[in-house]
Image 1 (tube, one colour):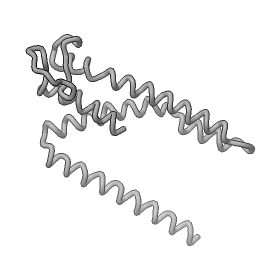
Image 2 (cartoon, one colour):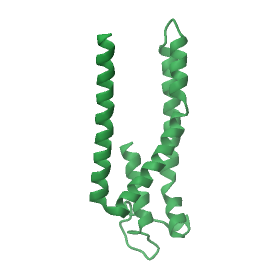
Image 3 (tube, helix red, strand yellow):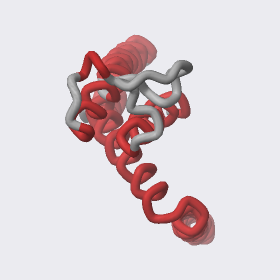
Image 4 (spheres, rainbow, N blue to C red):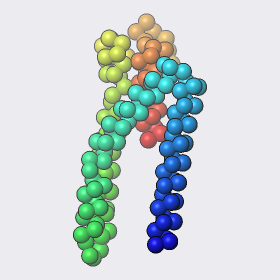
Length: 148
């Protein structure tokens, strides 16, 4: 019983510290980035969470169920689940990489073939959307994918 109590308290403390650190990081980012910058980061994280949801697709639960029911070698089952999650994550990443251009076009109201992202725009042109909030948003999505 003593080990159970110690394990419970360590999980409780770890979860409390995790939540406190998340709260403090959010408050710090909101203060440093300002309203617009924090909104861009929040939107990018929301888009990223949808991609993570699509890449998971319940495979963690299915993998746990498969492994718990096996009595022999579980390595082939684990490999299959990890491979499927990798394929889903790759598909989600490719979708997110294709997203910034059309997203800027929708937000700024310009045709997608005339959009240049601020991160990759090295030349000035009248068609450029460099410096627009939508281009900053799209660049943030690309940066967020890189961190993912």
